[in-house]
Image 1 (cartoon, rainbow, N blue to C red):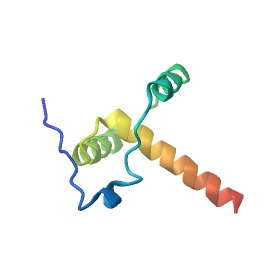
Image 2 (tube, one colour; image 1 turned 120 degrees about the horizontal axis):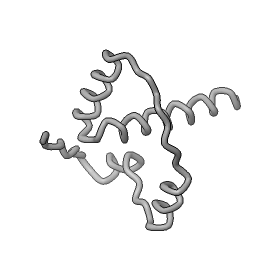
Image 3 (cartoon, rainbow, N blue to C red; image 1 turned 90 degrees about the vertical axis):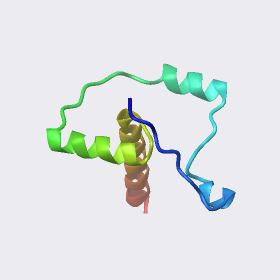
Image 4 (cartoon, helix red, strand yellow; image 1 turned 30 degrees about the vertical axis):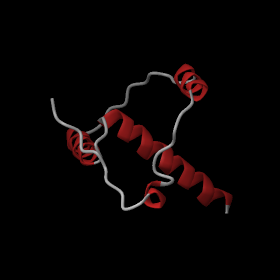
Length: 81
């Protein structure tokens, strides 16, 4: 099993905004509102995703969800302007 890299930050301010603390209620809400889907990805994209996730010390599916969430937020903001 690969060891996960723990990110280092210069200060608490540098860490702010990158990680959110979930309450038990938030976690239950998030899990109960999730739906399992299948997505076909080219092998090269999956390899890149796994490599980048490993650099960030995250499981690749968690990293992929994070990227998708960020992209959706960015697109919504762009279209609202």
